[in-house]
Length: 280
Image (cartoon, rainbow, N blue to C red):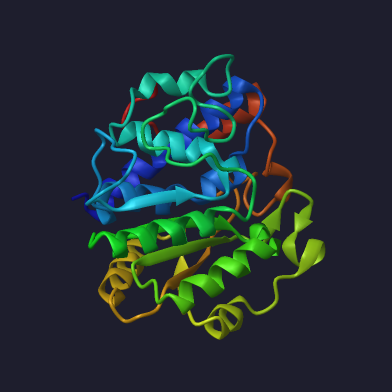
């Protein structure tokens, strides 16, 4: 189990991986990936019970579903650093015939990826199905999912939210990356989500707030959520993050949602993130 300092060190390297992947491909989504580096690192290096040898059915282990699949660079980096596939494979991100597609896919058989994602709004339905299946099979392990706040504009999210509460899926812990940014601008301008806490509570969920860019808060919140399992309610973590966290000129700027840094920008960004575990 990684302690806070180890998790912070790993998250810093993950952020370097993100930037180098997107720069190398000259395309991709660095903003949300950088913002979610802490929570993905905490999940895979401390919170979840999982096996990097990877079984697709996920029996007797915790499983994670990335619904906002465009932030694949952070997912790939964490999976590689956690031993699911060689770290050097990160250099193939978005290249021809790579397993590391721009959005995660299953036909490439990349270890750690259980669903193709990127069609926003679908991931919560899949997570509900997995949580329901685990309960039917007597599997006591948990299901985690991650979503973008812009994704909450999709109606399927709310159908799944209703399903989860009705079936008392208390083995489901979902997280919203609440960075208030999406590709076309601030979520409040594109289509305001309103009071998310009140909405999820009205649907029958337990709602928890978390600072997604404070590793200590991430760990303590996720560990507290695990203690709530068994109370009959699914849990939604509203995770405040800064898009582009860790790189000063990217932070809180929706323009970095899906733009690759050029050579000069990459150099400037990496200078703010010391190499900790070795670059690929």
